[in-house]
Length: 229
Image 1 (cartoon, rainbow, N blue to C red):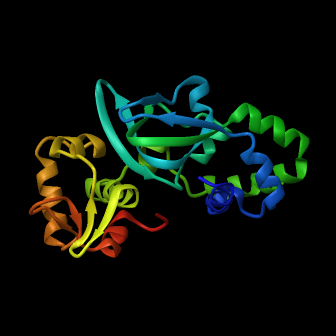
Image 2 (tube, one colour; image 1 turned 60 degrees about the vertical axis):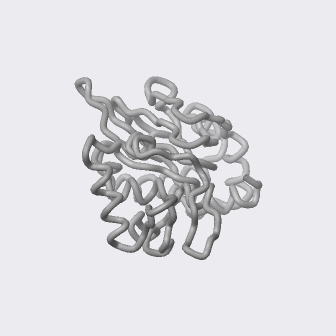
């Protein structure tokens, strides 16, 4: 991702509203780049959970592990961040990031960000205002990111369309080796749910599964995935 594209992506996040380009560039320089292969798991515990994660490229899912059960909460594609409030307080409890496509994440650690803000009280005040606005409308992580299967599936397919979509007369062909169980794992579907969810998208004229996985209506898929993607 180019520096210009990264700045545009950062500018779209509520946490950085009214932060100048120069100051935002300084914050970007504090970030670490993480290259993750498919299936890698990043447990958001201890220091790993004291950070803001941004999906620069790829597709990941956020899962919750409670009492031996694993639940997929949401799917994140490029340009989305995972919980800004983790920069300031503990918000994760049994949560992990799992890559479902080769991904590059940006990580802003709480300690490094706090040190920066100590030297920039003017920026700290702007960030405080933005954080208060975010916190005022937030639920706990497990509620905030708990999305139904159709939305998780739509977000996964939208991410693949951007990364592996090939234009054809019938729509965007997903040029990526996928089996039904691969999709089921990626979106965290329960056994028996996956076929029904895919059939629903076919019935809505979003997908064609007759020969290959083809997105026939990208605009409708974006609408199903939700705004801001």
